[in-house]
Image 1 (cartoon, rainbow, N blue to C red):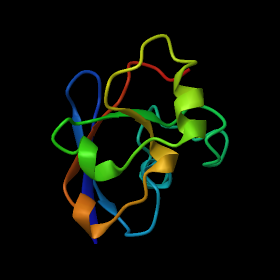
Image 2 (cartoon, one colour; image 1 turned 30 degrees about the vertical axis):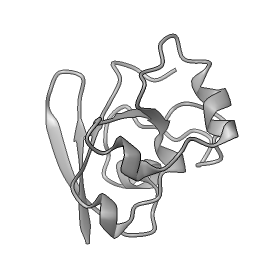
Image 3 (cartoon, one colour; image 1 turned 90 degrees about the vertical axis):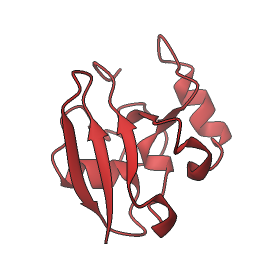
Length: 106
């Protein structure tokens, strides 16, 4: 099993086990990571699983889909490495991934 670290806006780190094949929104919700709600159930129809991928990991997460790009435009600010957690599937290559959480979801 892989590991993912979610970093709160205040710097608190939460390292969790991440089953290969699950998306990051599911992993966060299943581990009670505060601030990741996943209101749409992973359909890229909301931005309640918005995360900022640590720059060292961003290229490994793949490209944003058109639907993801569209949802991210609703955020007041979009970091260059912003993603929707529901659109990133956990792989062995992502073992050790670091994600930063926003102050609040929209």
